Image (cartoon, rainbow, N blue to C red; front, side, top):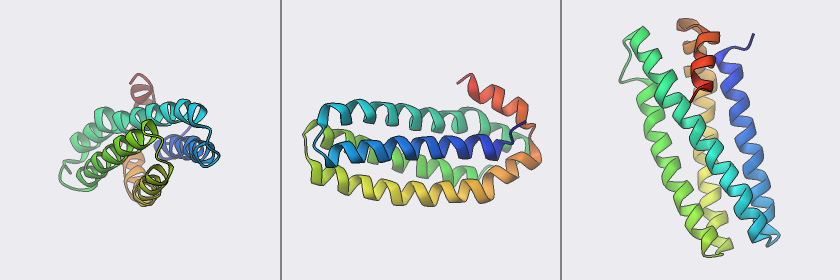
Length: 142
């Protein structure tokens, strides 16, 4: 059985891998392929955020009573990441490689720091206080 940390860390790795492919395609000037890969990246990333925000965070907060701690920080960082995804999408539609890659670099710095905090702090706390199989089942229904 997977822990919450293992399950969600794997989602992080999958999103990172998809983004690396998007970046490669854009660097090579393969705009149509890059747009398709970007849509997959965006979809998977936003689904991951939704699983955390709709299921994991409220369950953790309800169980622990901690509502202004790590989950609040993660929500704020999700909002920042969503804004960067929108900026990348605009740059992609405008075929602006420099802008896309620049915003993408900013996104990757933010998301790597964000993921590290989740993986080292929040997810282990969730595994300690919540039932992993129940949480994974609920998150997969999102």
